[in-house]
Image 1 (cartoon, rainbow, N blue to C red):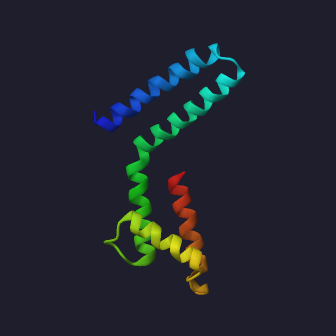
Image 2: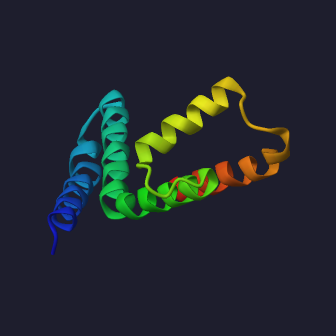
Length: 109
């Protein structure tokens, strides 16, 4: 078992105890705050379990789009953000860009 798996398992146990034992004993405001913490823990669990695969897939999609296989994910994200903000995409690539964004969002979800 890797440290990522162990950490995810620890968070799962803590989240379960928070939702099943701690939250029910709280007042309405406390239950709401406990639910927010439990949701944040669920996000962290998903990131630990799937984050590496998702980041690799996103990097591959962006690298193919730009034709730059050696770029890092942060570099590719910065380039995409810059290009979107500055409007530098050619109209002929609008469908390709739309498909890319759809695939990236789908992978991250």
